[in-house]
Length: 305
Ligand SMILES: Nc1ncnc2c1ncn2[C@@H]1O[C@H](COP(=O)(O)OP(=O)(O)OP(=O)(O)O)[C@@H](O)[C@H]1O
Ligand SMILES: Cc1ncc(COP(=O)(O)O)c(N)n1
Image 1 (cartoon, rainbow, N blue to C red):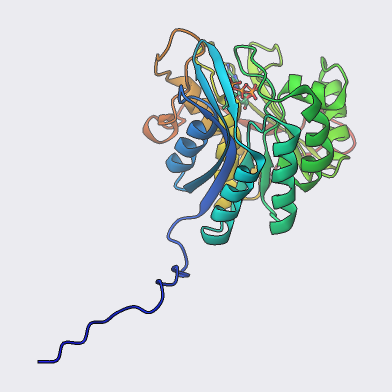
Image 2 (tube, rainbow, N blue to C red):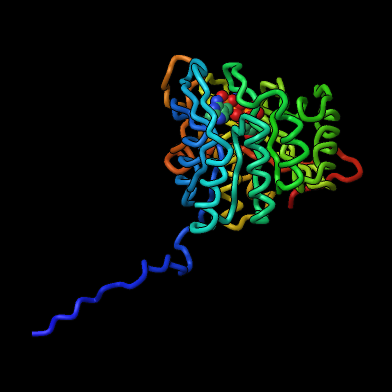
């Protein structure tokens, strides 16, 4: 009997069928405590039905009480991870978090322009909740001049917007001025987050598209479990964009996701505990009120819809 073995001459071609779920990738640091960084991003992608890939920029030893150590990844290895993901998985959207150094920012910006990413969310992570520095001081300029012009959207909190612009932000007029200055560097959308805004009634985030300011407001939640709120918010926005949402709906999704994640804390850790990444799908956002209203009457401001 002649048995012919069906030997493959070449490795199988990677599948090029339409993916069942959208994919997104995060370029960020590892948080051993699991509440922020790559871990928060991947959990958020998963909860929102998006496949998550990653490129690690740094390993941190940290928990809810603080950062014990930072070990950056060589920039060439960051590039290699991005190439591996870009060439095969082909994420529909990319997100950056902790980038740590000017060299890593250069490597990421190089890849962003090489692949011409149209959906790039830049979360300009600088300082951890416990006060540790996650971005070297001399890297702020590289972030501003190399990466922001390539971003579709940047999501600074108030101290990050102050560091980027060099201006003090107190009143709403300051927030708008900072958003205008950041937008002028070439980023298409700015989301200025209000978690550090000092208003204990409302958490208010401001979206600016170069023309219109839109407010996203939700009731303030009194909790110490706020570790990784910025990462989680930006990851939810990235998942929304990867799924094809327009920017305003992506921000609304992110606001709903973070509100649900803050509402039912997991009570882990003795310090700034992680948020509840299951909240959005398990508890929903029932009872949470959102408004997308103009910041104030005046030229260049309007309703979301
Ligand atoms: N206590 C709170 N109640 C309601 N919303 C909050 C609260 N704290 C933060 N937020 C919301 O969480 C999101 C992240 O904002 P925040 O300003 O905390 O970012 P961040 O400082 O970059 O976070 P992190 O330092 O954890 O990366 C925003 O939508 C903000 O309005
Ligand atoms: C790896 C990594 N990335 C980002 C943050 C910011 O999160 P937070 O400001 O809540 O500490 C962090 N602590 N660690």
